[in-house]
Length: 205
Image (cartoon, rainbow, N blue to C red; front, side, top):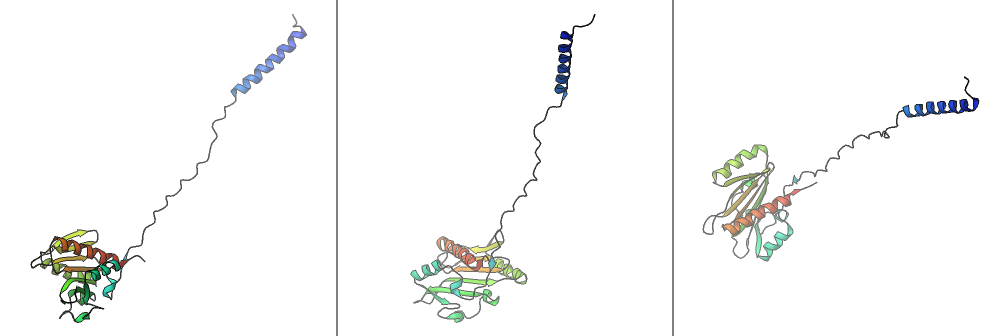
């Protein structure tokens, strides 16, 4: 029996709607947006400081900071020996080992006594010089201690007969400090003086 026309049209429309709905349901769902990964930023290297450079001093007032020189003056210590000193290089009868290497030796003491209280020397060092310096300091029975690129040869001394001695040997320099009177207090000052000399003669370009 033929389908009435008023039923056939809606049936066709319904069939078309179902087909469209089925097609729509079968379309792939859009995924999350794809973002192009940017290349990882290269790590920026940390800035490095230029290494400190040793400058051989030629004058005694160039081996210590101004504050220390002012402190010496306040104590009544005058520069007796060494470049710029009262007696210059004639204070000692013979050159010091540091002077023989092309360095300087500076001697502070009370002007009215002419006796040394503090002797500070600074000299440049080459690879050829190093072994001889080490042997000499070791033969003196000094205590050896290494820290970084510096090796210290030292003795505390005492208030009676042995001075406080501090030698700091680096690959390119030799700094020595001798306090005529030894003991704990003067040894601590000698260590501090050696550190101050190092900070003064080593500068960053």
